[in-house]
Image (cartoon, rainbow, N blue to C red; front, side, top):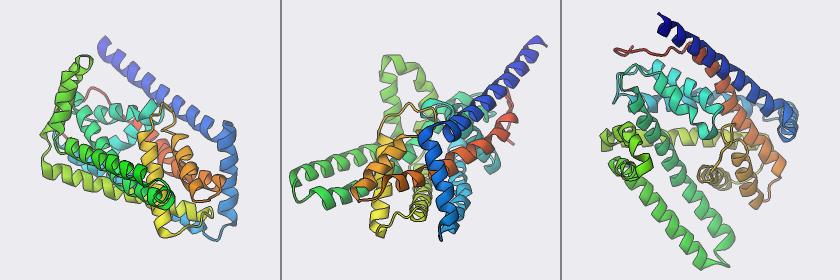
Length: 329
């Protein structure tokens, strides 16, 4: 009885901590950071005065598509552990998103999804979460490499052809290596098992080697579709904030910014807030665009896809139950 009572107390206490931290970081991000507050004010003013306000609404309507696709991915990946309905998968993604919001590099995403599993081997879900995130990284690198090639040809090919060729080769090697690892995940597990300090993690990642080639194809395809939803949202917001470019420049600029954001290490407690903005401002600065306009679009993207869903995810965190076992719902 005392064990059950203590477990319930810890669960309630954990929920309260998550809620308080989430609301606190939301407050810091929107109302106290000077640059963010300035950009937020600019966002509201531009949205009210622009003839393209409907693009903000259209971008917001794509939020369910973005995270709905991620839920579909998790449903496919989680099936290796237990039968998961789409609604349960969506709930797990929302819980993971909220917990990830207040942890460095979104590490809380692992805990959120694993806690939603009923299987006794729920910790093996860590490997399933990792392979899903790795798939999204592969999609980002594949498309982002094309964006980098465009910038290299546009800005540097005439003066530095040898360097550009070296970059093209490195990108080719990087993409080939990522695809080989993705479709031969057993190699990643073996690599982890071979490293002494990481050896204990190998059993939690072993599930990665159980996915078939076709299953990985499906997850990668969903990752690419989700990537282009995200990309479309960013382009719509750039247009809203008067960043005027050709279609190729929009696609190349956004894909390159996403690429840089993904490969630059970050310890941000706000879901990489700052890395994405710096990457976007640098890339679009090369195209002669005003930084504040790009910053406003990037912050809007973060607010729509991270802050709003994280706030919604609090509802699912409060309903989270620990210690469940048995069959799937």
